[in-house]
Image 1 (cartoon, rainbow, N blue to C red):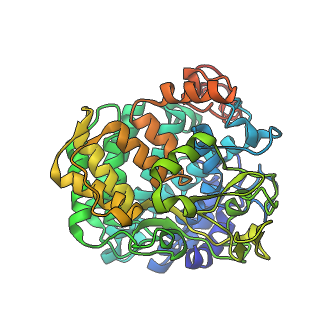
Image 2 (cartoon, one colour):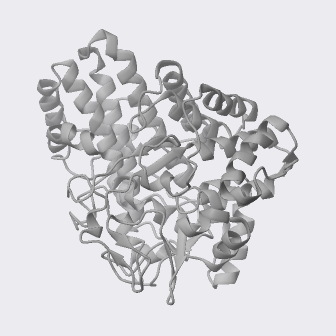
Length: 482
């Protein structure tokens, strides 16, 4: 984040000085340092911004040692898009190529890093909450709500990818292995996520797009309601309608502007990066290139043929903004590094593609509009509710302006899942959509047969990282199948 990294740099230097394996909480001597650091309201806010910094992560092309630097969300496409039917790795070499073939092991370094990164967010959020009374009284509720939103955001990622995980809601000593490593049921984790997000909804406003907001909490909570073991579709529908009726967000007329006019009217929550600055840039944009290698690998998020077919049939004007087919292969172009030129072959990717500044879009308005339809369908198979059909039509009309207003009288669950696929492709939503819609095993089994992979039901969860199991002395148990 452009300003967050600067403000959080001093705090981050202190927080990352402890052993990377002990990411859940600071070592006791670190607590002493933090007590001397948090002395004013400004100190607490700087610490809060450091929580966002943990989400942002460290550019993998800046610090190459994967075991020492958490990458935040910068590896998320590997754990989500690559495990769906959307994309794959260009090569079959290295741990990053294991995700699309369902060959992930408990020692996979990218999975370990993502797990540690989310717990770094949780640790920092818990730490700020323990010092919240130092802040000005007028800011304490807002800072608390932001920290809890971020904690909920991280736990929502973890519970969907790993299922039962340790639930830590306060600062505990690294020596407390039971509190640090005891897996807690999904139901209890979701209950904590809901509680945190409800507080954020009731406290925050919509001032920010790169920090927690009421709409971001409402949108995330709506998705939680439709994912948790006991679904709450009516609650999700009301939350989506609150965002829609707020008037604070709207679709961009030009689909390309969603990704290249950052913090635009469609963005609800984004994790910001800045081009060219090694401390604030990201590396995933460069890794999506493969025709001309701009990243450190041979290419990630290579587009699968079945997704290309869906784009050709249902993508409309989203297609050319989402991917491009060169003579040798198809590449994602939603997040082109600064200075890229894909109008020529071979394409060029600027002078500093490995220090890209493209934001990570965590939640945008089109997602909310489509969730509105999903909530109305609920446990059924379709909806003809005019109020939600209009939400679907708004997304469809932007994609097909030449036939707008497109006549839509009902939307089936299958049609909605397909619309979400082409609208949100490469934004790390497809895997979670397949899980939430209850079709992941069916779709991915067929995909594996088509691609020559081996998929089993246990592949719906990632393995608990072996590093954490070893640190726990065996207290932390493994997921089935690993």
